Amino acid sequence: MPDSQPRSPAKFITFEGGEGVGKSTQVKRLLTRLGHAGIKAVRTREPGGTPKAEAIRSFILQGRSEEWGAGAEAVLFAAARHDHVTQLIAPNLERGNWVLSDRFSDSTRAYQGLTGGVQPLLIDALEELALEGHTPDLTIILDMPPDKAFERVAQRALEDGIPSVADRFEKEDLNWHGRLRAAFLDIAEKNRDRCVVISAEQDAESVAENVWQSVCAHFPEVTRAMTG
Image 1 (cartoon, one colour):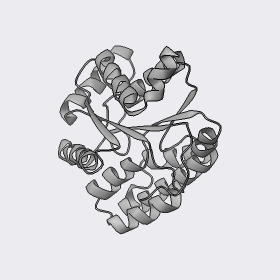
Image 2 (cartoon, helix red, strand yellow; image 1 turned 60 degrees about the horizontal axis):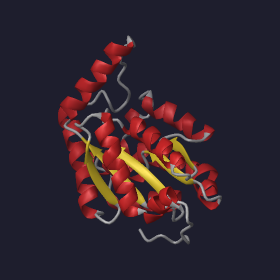
Image 3 (tube, rainbow, N blue to C red; image 1 turned 60 degrees about the vertical axis):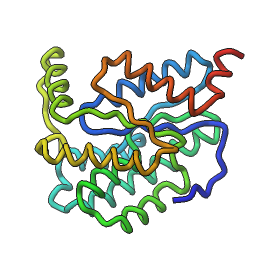
Image 4 (cartoon, helix red, strand yellow; image 1 turned 30 degrees about the vertical axis):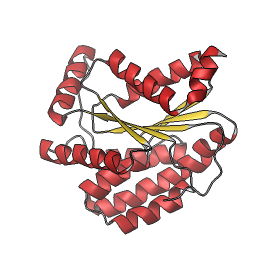
């Protein structure tokens, strides 16, 4: 979908991937590193980011929308995303703040579209309504085999002493998550100018360094900010 909005100097970076690949960790690390480079940024997540969107997030992840089907879930995600874009993402970009989001519209394409079977025409229409032209400048897709990702999640839960409770999507079987992984890789292949795939099987420090190098390669102003 073409971007109908003029681009501001601020950048919009999204992180995508399957369950348990470490997106939240990498969003936080990039936020810190941009701060050290003198670039003001905010982090957010989807579904969520605003009070209304967070309410929809809770409804979906508790599994209360599952019986409605993937099409209805796509509509709910679009409603949450529109509020997120208009109330948080667009205002920050207009103020010159970079925005880092843990998931965005590619997740709907992967989860409800390529994995859930929702028709592309509906996905396209919902995206046009929700985004209002605010497409990501860069998307980092963290990639890892699902079985290894869930082993990591279980190990972290054990170390933290907190029982792991699967949400609406985490409870799906490995075959489903394998198709989800393939969906994200398909999105990356079709959007090479915007998407970068980084292996999440590495340790968090190595992943963070790869993310940083990708950001610097896409946005020369980051390097200039560090040396200026």
